[in-house]
Length: 314
Image (cartoon, rainbow, N blue to C red):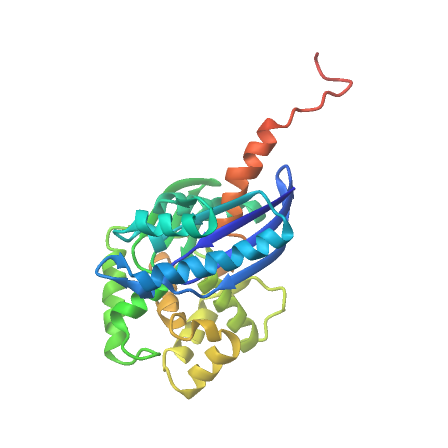
């Protein structure tokens, strides 16, 4: 059976289409629109232009899904709509234009979907799962393979850029402002002190961008999914100079993130430093896959009768 998940994020809006059976699935295709909705928020309100931008993007996804005749469609929004005062107005506009009902998930729910998505591929025993978004950062603390605590912090790559950076790339005082904003948002987070050699599992666009750039800069194997903290620090030192070389690197490998990449890396750098992690594991599954597993596949699996075998007790 085919399922489509639309994720209305603060930086990008994403469509993922899956083919699934019971608890297994594969990704058929993905589409991304860099809507940058957090950039349209003024005094806590998503502007008319911002709502129109979201409507246009979702309408484009609808055209794709209609042409494919996919019926199992779910649309959810994260900090893009939950952190604004006119959430209902935005939801109504999206519904009128597309007919889709939009579920606005809480920060804790978003964190747990990231956890379920990451755990589908690899079993994390002890550590943290991190998802750096456009307007929020979710962290799940894992103990003994189980989620112990799920938190959402109101700081993300795009919101940090808007609040602290005046030009395309940060310079001088902007780094101090970003450091202060990050420290303020994580002051009550009590990030766990991981044991020596621990790995932080990261999902989301910032982490994927970090892996992509690290693969090129450090000649990692193409199927590599890990970055050492030393490599990440070296990459940050290189990009944080915000010089022509840094601009060329970002434009070459992640042009869509020219303004949000460094703020996103600042958040990840803070987390790595505070937790003393030595490795960053980048997982290709995240919030959308966790949502798929919990909303669709778990329900389908529970509703499927277990076939009896010859040795089953009748």
